[in-house]
Length: 100
Image 1: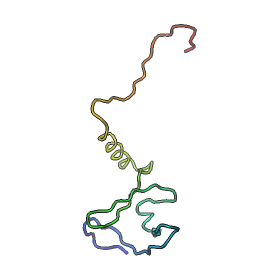
Image 2 (image 1 turned 135 degrees about the horizontal axis):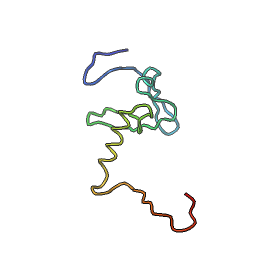
Image 3 (image 1 turned 135 degrees about the vertical axis):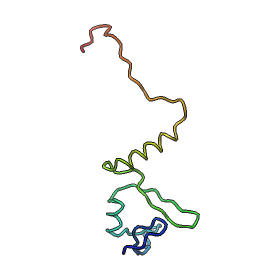
Image 4 (image 1 turned 90 degrees about the vertical axis):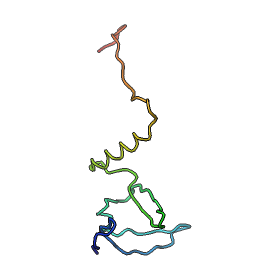
């Protein structure tokens, strides 16, 4: 069921929370999983907003989503300490019987 775009809402579906062992589980409808590219085994992050809304999003972008991968990389890089540089290889002239 497509809803009017309101505060970023793109799609809406209903589901039921069920008991699963000592936890609760939510089944994600197929049309929603296809929209957000969820699949079996995808790790997700779960957030609770100030309004007690639950937000699920993939922990890591899919390999074919270059824009999301770039945003993910930049967010990780922003958390790095200043002044740290990447490892650089240094090569020296052969000193013995090395085969090049």
